[in-house]
Image (cartoon, rainbow, N blue to C red; front, side, top):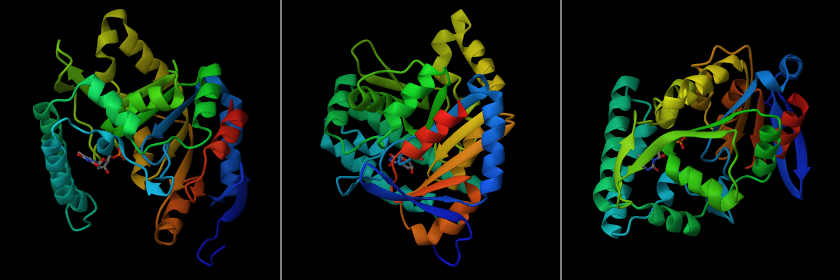
Amino acid sequence: QSGKNQGKMEQIVVNGSESQVVVDDSSLLQKKISAIRLGGHAKLQVIADFDATLTKYRVNGCRGQSSHNVLQQEDPEYNDKRQKLYEYYHPLEFDPTIPLDEKAKLMEEWWGKTHALLIEGGVTYNGIQNSVAKATIAFRDGVTELFELLEEKGVPVLIFSAGLADIIEEVLNQKVHRSFKNVRVVSNRMMFDENGHLQSFKGKTIHVLNKNEHALDMAAPLHDHLDDVNGLSDEKSALKKRTNVLLLGDHIGDLGMSDGLDYETRISVGFLNDRVEDSLESYQKAFDILYLNDSSMHGVLKLATHLC
Ligand code: TMP
């Protein structure tokens, strides 16, 4: 335990791999656990980031791919063009000197250009399946069991991402081999024409700077097709009544995913995957529970079992 680190750090070993968990304020965490247990599974919902939160940061020693990076277009020229945009905009995403409103405009610009290249270069559902089959991407151990437990208890899971919903769902199909009726992906969703070619994206673009606002409100475009059967409003109002939250993320900004919800108790779980020394202090203050070293999801599974 470093001198800076005031929190309680425990070494945990799961299936032979070692990781560490840090709890900055264990009495506060205990209070939150008791409050959520009291409310029971009927009041609980889970809001999770996708890339490097549900998925591993490293896969077989390589950096795991994000949902954007996974997608390979048929004409490699378009992959190069998207890569060039990445090289230009990604440093701006992390540039602390750019004011937030200006940065939001730049991010909108980036997402807009990338989406336009995906449409222009042609993406098909078949192409998505092939891209995912070849991708370096894997869920953390324990994610499937976590989703199964939450499904059994009827606890909804909102996966919130500035990536691509269709890719995330295909990763779920191919890596978990089943769907979960309690899991919803809130992300940029493709619309295909009658020939199966990408035609447009549905609803408001979700980028890194607005993804941290109101996951629940952004869920709206995803469920347009349910409007007729009152599915959207029913589902949204049911979610709003679930005022206890288990939030999972790998950036401090991910904490904003629950902003649209007037929650009573929230337990936040963070995954600090990289440059641990630089961010440990701020992350352990921000998250109730912090996992280091690209940890598995087994700790969260244990917590969820206890909560519901
Ligand atoms: P998220 O996974 O935390 O929701 O953030 C999405 C990430 O996707 C963000 O860090 C930037 C990245 N990205 C790409 O890698 N390629 C792209 O074309 C775009 C638009 C974003």
